[in-house]
Length: 145
Image (cartoon, rainbow, N blue to C red):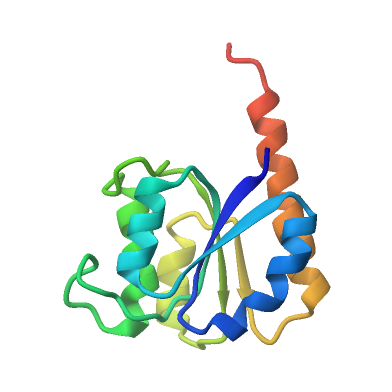
């Protein structure tokens, strides 16, 4: 069964080059271009992994936050269990070109699996996603004590 990977990115061209390679590696890629689409996808799909930019249109569900804070707000909602059917401990990879040290610091405190800054080598991105998937599958196989 393929793991569902949600990309939260308002610029499709920024992530679509990864889709083909990731789908060959056992992922089903879903794109959300704003906060409303992201929350809807998290509520209605069994998402295994999230790749998120830190800046995108927040939509109505994230409230009155500027686009530069949309990623932080969405991640806070996820970690606090505020999105129905979404595992608050889900693996999240930040994939961004936005240089904002303050937001980066806040996001890292919310336990992200990786923080990748663009421009970045294509193979590094694919390797990061594959390694997190492999670790996730290994953890699922662990017996419950």
